[in-house]
Image (cartoon, rainbow, N blue to C red; front, side, top):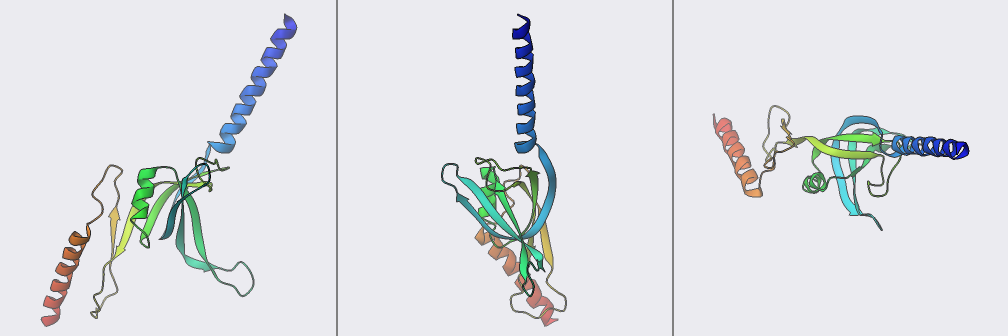
Length: 175
């Protein structure tokens, strides 16, 4: 009886220790932050587990070897399909993405330790329409709410907005 009790306690300790190690290695959020840059790609890929993988090109350059220049790239995975679908519509846009960093990857979570969970903001540059301006291009930042479903303009709405800006620029140029 005493031997059974000792073995049971040892097995329980080993199982709890193993559970703690697995949690720490695969589920503990090691870091969290925001990265900004231009969305280069978002793709759905995988053999057994299909996951969304993306790449954000950040401003600046780094040299990995002598006499070479390489851009800063942020490779990430996306678990939430809703966030991934939003990112698919935002190719080549400047974005700020919120991410969680884990110690190790899980095949059903993605190929990266960086998991993007939300879009913080979209930075749009106003079109210049080929007109000369005295000031540089102004940037418009749209903050994204978690439950906001209408943060994107349709093509017709965007065209109307550009037409209004173009007309106002023509008006000021005539003065």
